[in-house]
Length: 166
Image (tube, rainbow, N blue to C red; front, side, top):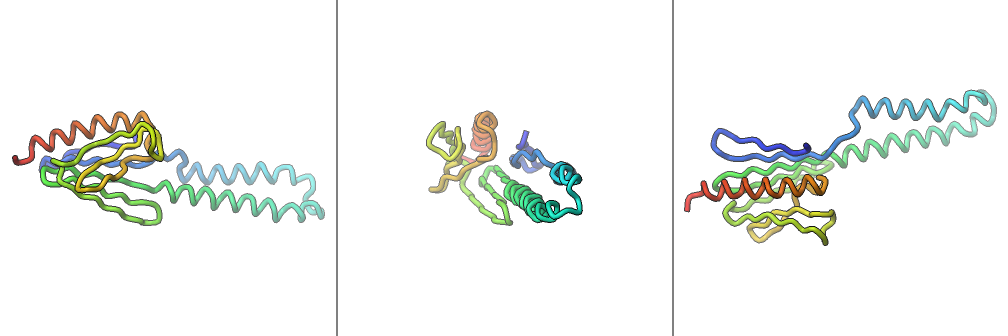
């Protein structure tokens, strides 16, 4: 599961979300190495000929392009979202690619969870609304995970709201 809940000793709830990561560093190295080997393998029959030297720059460009595209994809997936629910505040901190930081804070008593089945950038778009703003949560999750997270968020918010001083 790309998200997990934890509780602190002061009674606050913490939700940490990270996107799925299918390619580890070792897998990345193996993929680039295997791709390079499979591309170069047919060239062994024409090694040290003008055909080899004519194709080599294009092969190197293709492998380098794949390297940079995978690295860029990896950087773009380095997103973390952390929601901290206390009886006094709900704080969402989103660390995006290339160190972009977004912060949202609201009174948990007025925070509501919304699920937009259609019309959002992703199916079952999940948002938190409070303090005059609506922020997305877990856009990188699958629709099923967003549905499960919605009910867990509503339960956690209800628990915080009942613990809040009236």
